[in-house]
Amino acid sequence: MTRILIVDDHPLVRSGFAQLIGDCPDLEVCGEASDMSEALNQVEASKPDLAIIDLSLAGGSGLDLIEHIRTHDKKILMLVASMHDETLYAERVLAAGARGYINKQEAQESIIRAIRHVLSGKVYLSQHMTDRLLSGLVDANGEKRDIDSLSNRELQVFELIGQGVATGQMAEQLNLSVKTIETHQAHIKKKLGLGSAHELNQRAIRWVMEQDS
Image 1 (cartoon, helix red, strand yellow):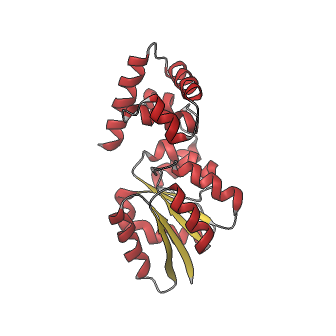
Image 2 (cartoon, rainbow, N blue to C red; image 1 turned 30 degrees about the vertical axis):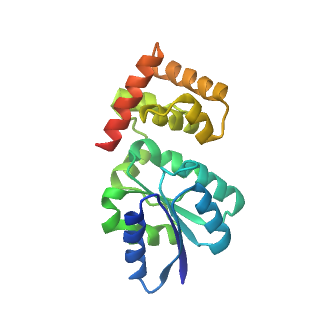
């Protein structure tokens, strides 16, 4: 029996995944978590064979969780299920240590196939993303190409800016100093060619709205 941990901040998503997994006689859900802290406790307590992880989590990002798990237990396989743009995040989650990426919009139909693909030792991505990686093509959209140049932490800060999170709250949420957050903001402005905090805010808000649409 393969043991699977579900990490997602939406109860309905966890319930849906659990039901699909429960219908498979060789798979079982060994635990669920809604945030970073719960996920780390469940990893330690339930010893899953595979973890399904969302990128947006309270108390830390899915990327942080993936890197932590890979560092402490390389035997745990990880599959990301998220609403974020696959073309921007797929390579990042693979680099962090996950073995696949599935968009939540297709997850209901494909989650079991993705799980079995990863359990067989393969990497699971959409056909579009697989073709993109194999061909080495760069996204023709200049804005995405610019944002793709951000580091994982810079991208996390950029998203929080777009969500309207203040610098002090951001520092507390990410366990960083305000000065470090301001340094990340300065780097983001430079990489995106933005001249002011106002331009940064507008660009980040627009990007977050595009991700949610």
